[in-house]
Length: 306
Image 1: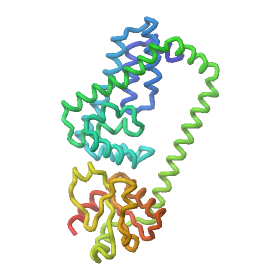
Image 2: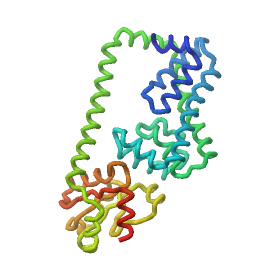
Image 3: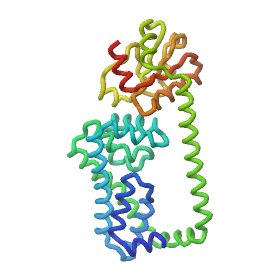
Image 4: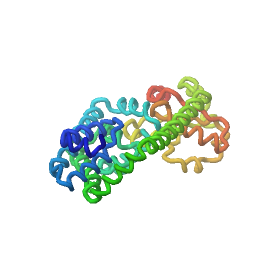
């Protein structure tokens, strides 16, 4: 049974359920179903107002759950989400940077940004976003996400049926190609995570060893703090001998004498992902003594008191 037949049979409850499941993080093709719903609206099989209300309501219910979870668990929730993400560094650092730069306005367009859509709301909630501002921007974001796809289905209603007929004829082949592309993407991301884990295991340093190096003074060691600006604002404690790294270009601006020191990279993200990526870039740039500080917030507490 194709999406048009499913929607014609189950209608508004299915639209609500699909949108809710998609925003909850389940692998549901929300956008294609919204396009099909728009085609059914054009044909008169579904009412426009009912479709819009059901889709936006499903979006808002799921987003409210993410907001409540972010307020309740804060960054512990983000750490859990990003540990299962294929891009743990992007999951934390990019979302933090975008929230820091654009604030709540990011929620208007976040649903269109891969890797950001699921974590933008709990990140904003953990950062202290008020419920009133969350509701204002999230309603706008849900509308901006839902309406264009329903509108596209309404405009191209006849072509939607033709496209589904083509997919039905070429279904097995098209599904095989899509599955192969998804599998290739997952393999690449898993290999990247494995590479970072191996690098992390080779160059890791614990807080106790790092404190002994710090005791030798600035001539011996420098710490590159790879936390996002938002993470630093939430926890302003500073590591001794630390230089903040806000982007990749900051490496090129490091003083020449840094190459002669032990360079310790640090972040509070899951699995030290940002610190491991920074260490990898340093090694590729010719730095020879590079270490990744383990322990996250615990390491920050220990070394900030040194």
